[in-house]
Length: 251
Ligand code: BTN
Image 1 (spheres, protein in one colour):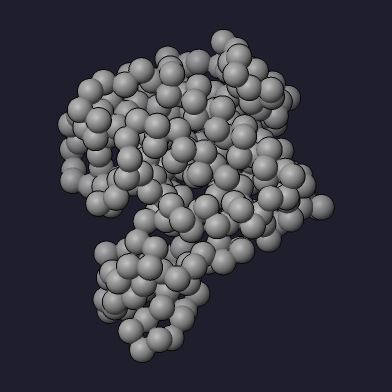
Image 2 (cartoon, protein in one colour):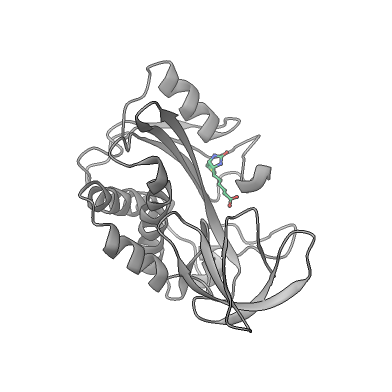
């Protein structure tokens, strides 16, 4: 399969009826020299889908979107890794917003509805070389047409729009937007990228509850996500604290 609405992304799309994890598959195939920048692996069923923080990623077979793409963002410094995250999140956000308003990006890399229900997530795995970023496997999992979930928290595009979506059309749109955002990233348009990420950020400037691992719950509001991707929370006393994603939990 070849996508027509892009220049380099998705010129090589491999569809698998089933695989362990498209991220693992793409990483392995890239190492073996079978993939190039822009290649995509997409499947209808993952038997060992992986999420962030070592979690599993569950998705009803044949209903959703689960795919990974290969990028070689050698132009980024290691300290700019989060900007790739921003570009991908914004691209997914833009594609979904065409179908329903109220889509938000949740730090660090979830896609949620405005009430916090999770539509999907992004798992980017970077390989660093001696001179910085070498290649990245960008994994995207989105709930599209799944209606029933075994536990509370997730939502799907079909639930939000009230009708089934054409997965192929949405996939093409996401790829198109990723190419667009990635091109801006390559051109060094970091200021705009960081601004729009903040603009679409879930809970930006809103008082809400957070928790440090093992600590007690506190109220704070997000005031920024800094260049390297740390979350800046302002507490009630006015103190602003920086968090990496292992250091804080949204409640
Ligand atoms: C998260 O929210 O925890 C990130 C989920 C990322 C899931 C996608 S599905 C395609 C790709 N392959 C995987 O094993 N994981 C990612």
